[in-house]
Structures are given as structure tokens and as C-alpha cells.
Image 1: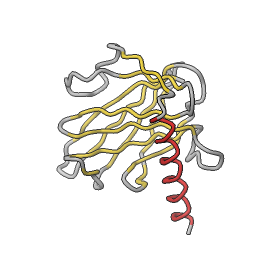
Image 2: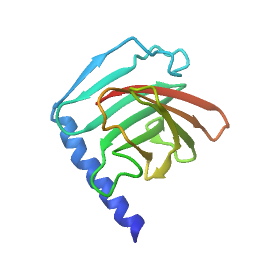
Image 3: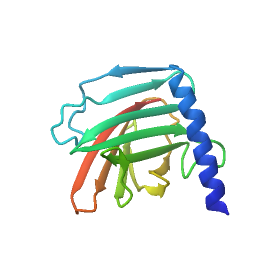
Image 4: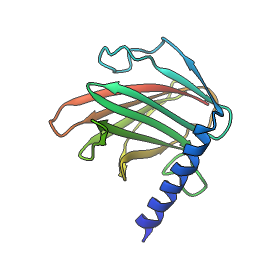
Length: 160
């Protein structure tokens, strides 16, 4: 029952967040710093996102033929999964979300402190909570292992 309730609340939050994101109440600043965040030489730029409205962030990266979605949302009370924000990842190949993955995440906070957490599966997404409520630039990184045993790295910056 708890899992069903959690899933319903997550889907509801994603729906509301999608509407907020589509409203255009956000700003991007493109930045050439930090390209060494594990994109394996792909020419994608890291993106800094500053939220002006609802605390929601969504960026996509192409990594070794996979489409990786980085999603950060301010956690609703009681839904923090271990932090002030939920850090979520979806990995797709050919438009289809991959399910058989192992994903680890690392966040380097503005003060230089870092923490790592494994991400747990939640529908098509993998997630965990991090405290990202303090001001500054957070580096968000992932390492995921696909069913073929290969490891892939990607990362973005999140400004709060």
C-alpha cells in the first residue's frame, strides 16, 4: 500500500512539475566549464539552471548513445527521500526507458563537500534525496552500468 501511495504521489508531483516547467518560468545559462564531467568526449555543454519559480530542473544529455534525463525537484514535506530535493535520473535508448540498470550518484556541493548515493528505481526513474537547498552551484554526477556490463558517466550543474 505504501509503494502504491508513493507512486501516486510521485506521478502527481511529476505532472504538476511538468506544467510548471512548460510555463517558461525558468532560466538557463550555458557554460563551458566542467566539460570533464564524464560525457566521454561528447560535445554537449554542461548547463547551469537557476530556478526562479517552482523548484524544478530538467536537463538531458546524450551519453554513449543513451539519452540521460537529469531531474531535480524540491521535495514536498514527507517526500524528501533523504534530502531537501529529489535527484532523479532516467536513461533511455531509442525512446524507451531502460529498466535493468545500476546507477550511483555523486553531488559536489558549493563548499566542496561531496556525497554519493545509489539511486533506487521508481517507475521509469531512478532517484534519491540530497540536501540542495543551500545557495550555490552543485555538481550532479552519475555512473550507470548497463545490462552489457559497460559503465557510463554523465553530469550537469544545478544552481540554487
